[in-house]
Image (cartoon, rainbow, N blue to C red; front, side, top):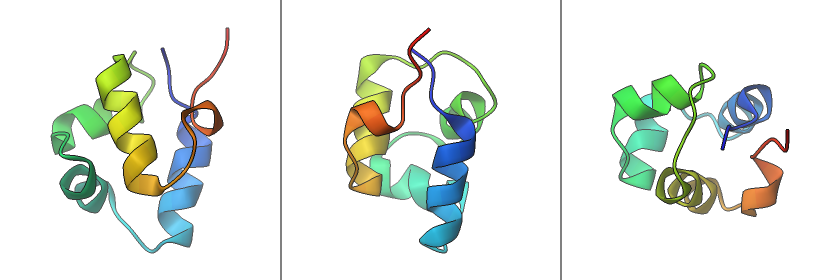
Length: 65
């Protein structure tokens, strides 16, 4: 699955967070966060962790091809 990069980056900006903050909140490495926010495919665990850290439903941050 892929993440809606623009929407997640917008959420980060609205919450005054950086990718490194998201990494800490989600328990996912900063390198992985950067990769998925640059278009790489993410596994379900990563997507769920990011959604939980941002306090949003998974469907709000994933793309459906």
